[in-house]
Amino acid sequence: MGLLSRLSFSRDMGIDLGTANTLIYVSGKGIVLQEPSVVAIDQDSKTPLAVGEDAKKMLGRTPKNVIAVRPLRDGVIAEFEYAEQMLKYFIRRVHEGNTLVAPRVIIGIPSGVTAVERRAVMEAALQAGARDVRLIDEPIAAAIGAGLPVAEPTGNMIVDIGGGTTEVAVLSLQGTVLSESVRVAGDELNEAIILYMKKVHNLVIGEQTSEDIKIKMGSAYPMQDEDSLIMEVRGIHLLSGLPRTVTIKAPEVRESMMEPLSIIVDAVKRTLERTPPELAADIIDRGIMLAGGGALMRGLDALLSHETGIVTHIAADPLCCVVLGTGRALENYKELERVFNGRSHTL
Image 1 (cartoon, rainbow, N blue to C red):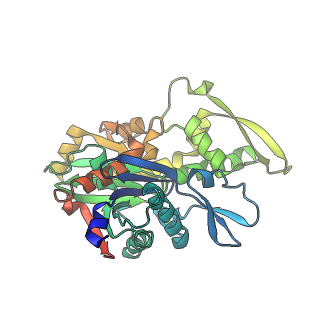
Image 2: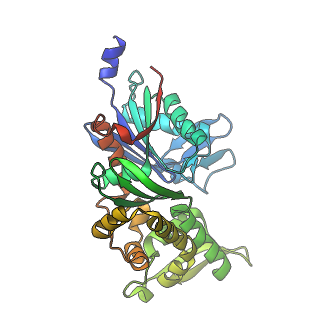
Image 3: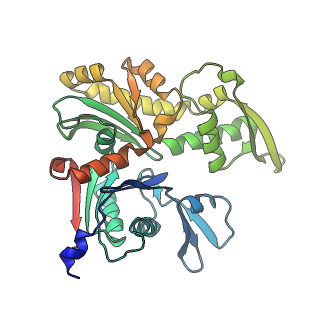
């Protein structure tokens, strides 16, 4: 089979390579994969034992010869080899084992990453089997995925809160007018809860437990009847070294997260202060759009509305905004060509 005919069967894909989760959109099919960005490695053979959901279940529970790794930290590749193995596994799974087909790939990345970090993402995708890689800044991808009119000459503000980074951007005419990327997001909220439990309750808890507390009890703004929300948390007592259960309430979970939440709010305020007057007027009319997994935090829209005085909306499908944006950019390649900021070829 000739090269061109092989490539004609390629399943081109958009990828949200996130710190917490990886999502893949296949042209003509929609979102086909949504898995945690985790790889479990056998240290003796250096081969992956599990990837995605199966590997996430192993976090904090592996024997000595196995490590469960999150290859991305703060939105960028921290463990190149493991990131490459993870991408290769996901791409092959999407292609249903057909290794002869080389896809075109668009990847959403944080806007604040360095040139070296951008190159690492492209190299990982190429090594994983892509024939052509384009990069798109996550705020633009999230805005496209959230349905904002990014091609029009009007100001749109997007706040994309992922696992490792929070992206705040003002967009117009398929471009970023100004943006700020802070490496404070879902992971830091988890860490703040872990620190609070240790400091206040003398209880050591793991990352999974912390995330569970955040999802079930977390809020960014006072909510109705929150005092009645209680949760039993199990961990290791610092003083005795033995397992213990403590009961916590929703207001103290919010208190534990106030520092990272205030960093996110300050980034939004700084971006608004730097926004040109005409675009600022558009944002006041249209409001701020929240995307990413962090947008699911109860009361975050109310907190931003209260702090900025601008109505804040939550995207219809916040978790999938970036990958939907990469998919729409893939399917409208010519019309949205100006949104891409990186390119590499192997063929």
